[in-house]
Image 1: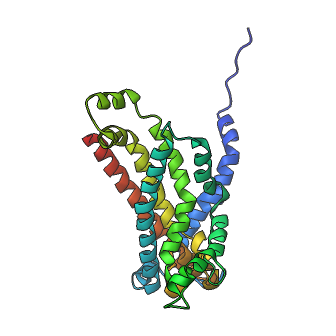
Image 2: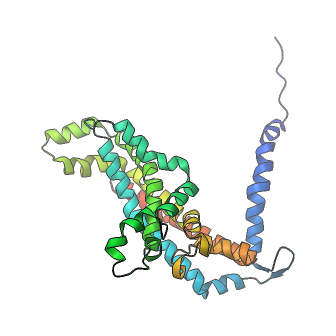
Image 3: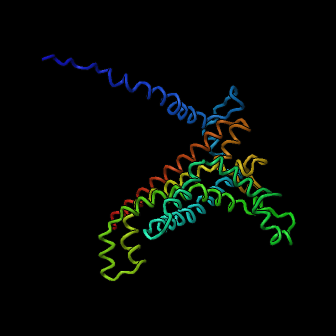
Length: 298
């Protein structure tokens, strides 16, 4: 019998070396560098001045930053209120065994998720084009009779962004909820029916508690994704670099991009990025605590 020689203690590190090198170069070092930049003021890549907490103090009195916060919060609220219930309604509808063509409908609703945000932004920029867009053409006789200069993309900035986001992401959330609905215990539904529970009571007391963990995850993902809004306004309002009319489409990430790459102040942009990161981490921790409290209460 051959004796087994012990492996070198460096063997695991040899296999981990490619990952550690890529992680250090593209994640760890950029995060550390951005944290350092948050306490500096830059005028291009070579002129750097240490300013301490001045970037964060300036942020508190920066009106454009608070406009971006307001717009982003409004977008996140509208997306949460509309997108998650719409995905749940679609999942309940497409989970019905009596519905014919369920597989086709699932593909149709899920397909926008595959094409990506940029493609969806281009599609909606064509649909909402001021002169020849389908939406403005249909509204021409109804609204332009009293406002000939009306354009949907300018008059309804936030609804345009929420609508584009809804078309892009509702199928993604629907797929998760469909998987959750198919795992609801059928014996509990049958028992509730035997006890005389109607459809609403079966949903509220049996189905909803079973899919609540998935709903909690989708709420968190939708919230985080909403605060990362950048592509849609940047494409729909490319002529104003994503700001939109009267800065109505300006998001936090768009303002970060403009501050860092158009104004050249990477320090202030890094401070904005870290504040956004801390807000999202706090929201995730609060969401996790509330979810655990609900699960303990149930």
